[in-house]
Amino acid sequence: MKIIVSEIPEEGIELDLKDDIKSDVVSIVSPVKSVMRLVKIEDEVMVKGALTADVELQCSRCLNHFPTRISSQVDVVYHPVREIVKSEQRELKSAELDTVFYSDDLIETDDLLREQLILNLPMKPLCSPDCKGFCPKCGADLNISECGCETKETDSRFEVLKQLKKEKE
Ligand SMILES: [Zn+2]
Ligand SMILES: [Zn+2]
Image (tube, rainbow, N blue to C red):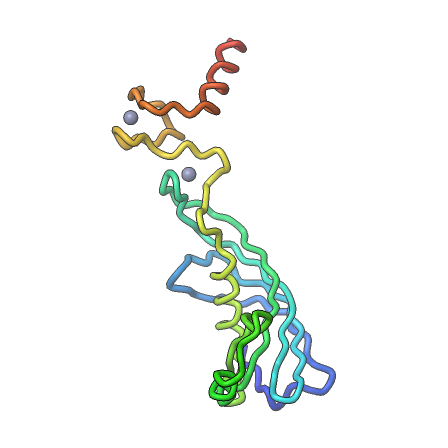
């Protein structure tokens, strides 16, 4: 959705959106739902709210793709692009790191939501917290089957689990 900055009323605007957004970085498999409040102070626009979307990630251990839900806060301040020169002169405070720029009196909420979503993707996605990954020797997906390879470094946590299993049997 395109927001015309000069048309944001004094009292601000509330957005309740459900947009189909595409990204080159991540496969977004649901509409991106967001609730945001935009308030204009002089020529800066504060955006606060939250977003939710379903994405498909690749597990960093087993490399399988899996769906997951990303929910994140949105808390950014838009400055008009002509302010860049000015802001280079003053020191950027750390509080201003969530600063973004708009130009031509326009804020494109799709761009904002896409960026915020990508910023909140996990660095090391896991299909499940106890994903076993694959065997470093034969490449078998250990979530599907044990390959039987002897691996030198045994993970003590798995040894404990194996032991527990044996005791149950
Ligand atoms: Zn996995
Ligand atoms: Zn193996």
